[in-house]
Length: 88
Image (cartoon, rainbow, N blue to C red):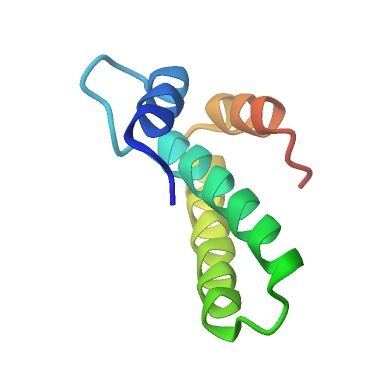
């Protein structure tokens, strides 16, 4: 679970305008951070199947947001991939 301060920092880094909190770039960044934290959790709790299912849903959701971003704003797509060190 991300703290409010961490979320705000991620949103500030990836927002397009001052009032942007839900664009695809912001969503991808937030999901990437949650995926990272959940992956660390699953390394110590390998039998936590509910968390594993949630992780798979987050990965699928992030993939959909990335596809949308690539289709509609390729410049932002490349920036997000570079900033988050994602490979596609």
